Length: 84
Image (cartoon, rainbow, N blue to C red; front, side, top):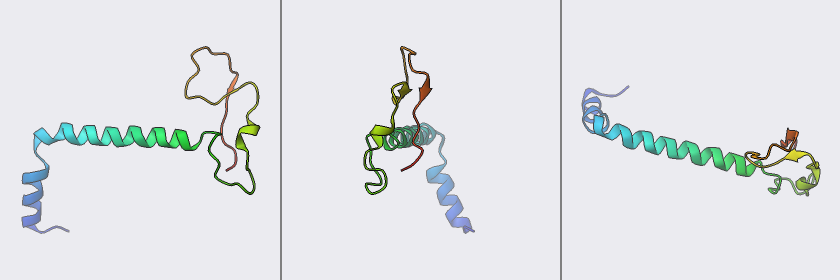
């Protein structure tokens, strides 16, 4: 797939041991950002389909938790988006 010169260049400049923490930090930061973006986009305040479901926050019942975590523990179930 790669020529020998390309392999030597990549090994010399990209596979150095001092760069591994930088790679790990960048991958971790992108992963955390993707997780929180997915959580924010599934929130009931976000409207994706204004024609079929213009008010998704009206489908949240009184005993459903919509937050990331519930420190008080007073909600019986977690809200999830069943339709866009």
